[in-house]
Length: 191
Ligand code: HQG
Image 1 (cartoon, helix red, strand yellow):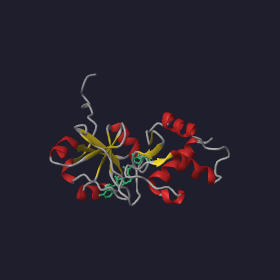
Image 2 (spheres, rainbow, N blue to C red; image 1 turned 45 degrees about the vertical axis):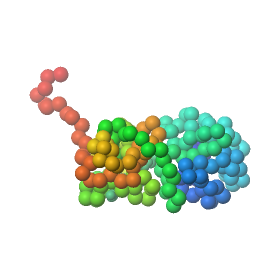
Image 3 (cartoon, helix red, strand yellow; image 1 turned 180 degrees about the vertical axis):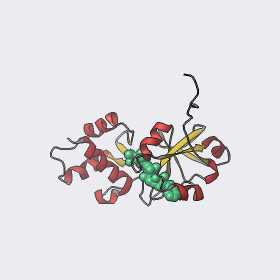
Image 4 (cartoon, helix red, strand yellow; image 1 turned 45 degrees about the horizontal axis):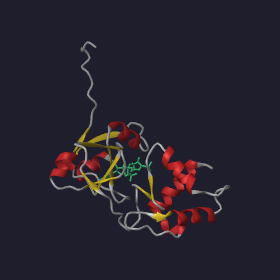
C-alpha cells in the first residue's frame, strides 16, 4: 500500500471534496471511518483493500499530524477548503507564532495582513523550522513572518488548535506581523 498516496487522497476527501466520496463532514470535520473506507475501496484505485489499520499507520508514521481518529470517526485537523466552516477548538496560543510565505506574496501581506486565501483559516507554525518548511513548498528562500500572537490574543483575536505544530486563525492583522530575521553574530565576534 502506498501510504503517501493514500494520505493525500484522504486529505483531498476530508479537506476539499467530501462530496466526491459521498461523505458528509460533521461540524468538527469528522466522517465515519467505515464510510471513508467504503468510498476508497469502491474507487478501485488501490490494489489491496484499504483498512482502518492503514489509516492508523498513516497517522502514526506521518511527519505531520494531518488526520485524527476518535472512536469510529476520522477527520483532517487543518487545511479545509470546503464551504461548510469546520469548527475548531479555541486555545491560548504561544506568545510568538511564525508563518512561512513567498517573496511574491509579501507586499500584499504587508498591506492586508494574512488572509486564509482558499482555505478556511490562516495556518501558523509554532517555530521557525516548521514555518520554513511550509514556505519552501512555494519559495526556495521563503520569507518568515513573526506573529505577536500574545498581543493579538489579548486584543481579542481568536486562535484555534490545529495540531501540535499548527495554529489556526481567521486572519492576522498587519500590525501583528513583522519579518523575522535570524539573529546573526557581528563579524568581529569571537566565538
Ligand atoms: C499566502 C500545508 C497574498 C500565504 C502546510 C500562503 C500548512 C497571502 C498562501 C498548510 C495573503 C496560501 C497551509 C495575502 C496569506 N495576500 N497572499 N493577504 N495572506 N497569503 O497553502 O499556510 O502538507 O493555503 O502566505 O504545511 O502555505 O498540506 O497556506 O503562501 O500547514 O498538510 O497565501 O498546508 O500542510 O497558501 O499552508 P496555503 P499555507 P499539508
